[in-house]
Image (cartoon, rainbow, N blue to C red; front, side, top):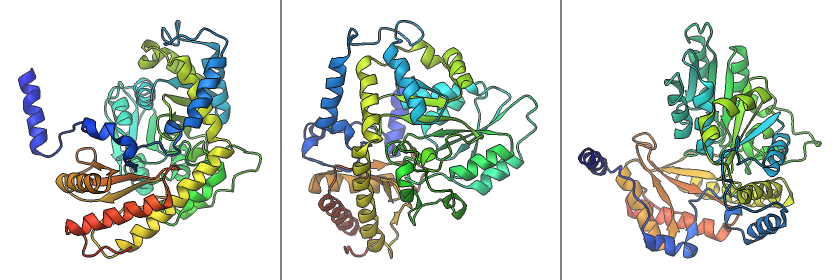
Amino acid sequence: MENRMRAQLLERKEKGRLRTRLPVTALENSSSLFDFSSNDYLGLAQSDVQKNKVDQIYQSQGQKQNLGATGSRLLSGDSPYARHLEVWLSRIHNRSTATLFNSGYDANISLLSSIVLSEDWVLVDELCHNSLIMGVRMSRRRQYVSFAHNNVADLQYKLENMPPLHAGQCLIVVESVYSMDGDVAPLATILDLATKFGAKVVVDEAHGLAIFGRSNKQDLLDSTTSLKESEQNIAPYKKSCKYGGTGVLAAMELENHTGLLASVHTFGKGAGCHGAVVCGSSVLRDYLWNYARPFVYSTALPLHSLVAIRTSYETIIGAEGEHLRKNVFSLVHLFRDILSKSLSSTKIKLCSSPSPIQALIVPGNDLCINLCQIIFDRYHILLYPIRAPTVPVGQERVRIILHAHNTPCQVRYLCQALLAVLKEMHLIMKARL
C-alpha cells in the first residue's frame, strides 16, 4: 500500500502539485514577516487585547475549568455556557436556533451529509469549498450538479431541467464570499429562484462573518463586485438592526428569507478563534442532533473555546469591530486602486473582488510558486501560491489577504514588490505605481 501511495505522490510532484509545509525557519521568523496571507481579517487571532479579554472572562467562570469538554454535546460535553451561547448566537444571526460545531469543515460535512437523501437533487456552485463538496459526497445522494460560478442564468437553467423529484427535494449550495476569488454571491436572486422552484439554499458564510454586515452594506456594492443591479436595490439596513459584521445575509436582510434552509458561520477566519455554528429552524437543529454524525460522535468544544467565540462576537458587533472593518476596506480600496491602474494594460488579471480577499491570476503552478518565493526571500512578504488542483488549471493565482493590522505603507510596499517581481519574471512589461 505504501508503494502505491509513494507512486501517487511522485506523480503529483512531477505535475507540480505536491503540497508541503513551510520550512521551519519561516515559522520561526513569522513575526518579522508582513502578513498578507492569513485569514485573520480583523487581526483578532493575534490581538493581545483580545487574548486578555478571553483570559479574564474564562477565569471569571465559576464552574470547574476542565482542559477538555470530556465528551460529545449529547453526553458529558454539554454545559449551560454552551447552551446560552447557542441561544445568543441565534439571536445575533436572526435565526430560530444555532448549533455549535468544532470547525467549519465539521459543520459543512455534518449538515450536508445528513440532510441530503438519495432521492434529492443538489446544485452546487462550481467554486464551493471542498468541505461543501465532501458533505454532499458523504450523503446518501453522493452526487451533485455544479452550476457556473455566480451565474444565475445557468442556475435557473439547471433548475428548469432537473428531473421530476417525486419524494425528493432540491438543495442549492453556495458561499456568501468565495475564498479563492473574494467575490460575493448574488444571494437575493439565488434565494428568490430557490423559492420559485421549491428549492432550499444552504449559505456558507465562512468568509463573510466579521467582514460584512448591516452597518457596511456599501462595501458590498463596490464597483468591482459581481452583484447585479437587482441585488443593489435592497432597502438600506434598518436603524433598529444594530449589529455589524454578522455576514452577507445580514447585510442584505436575507436571514429570514423563505428560501434559506441554513447558514454556516465559521469562526476560524474573521472571528479569529475556532469552531462554527449552523443556524436554522428548530426542526433542523433537532435533525442535526440525531443524524449529524460528527456532532453526535465528536468531543465538544471546551469552555475556553466557547468563551473565545463569545468574546470575538462581542468585538465584531461592537464599536471596535466597526473601526477594524473601516481599516480593512480602506486598504482594500488602496490596494485595488494601485494594482488596477498598474496592471490595466497587462495580461496579469486582478480578480474582481470587493472583499479583503484579493487574487492575481498567474497561470501555471511553477510561475505562482516562483513569484511567491522571490517575494518571500527578497521582501519578507509571506504569500501563498494557490495551485491546481485547488483551482482549475490556468486559474492558478497568488492569493492576497488584507487585514486590519496592515498599514497603508505596507500595502504600497506589497504592490511595489509584486510589480517589481512580475516585471523581473517578464510577466508584465513595466512596473509603475
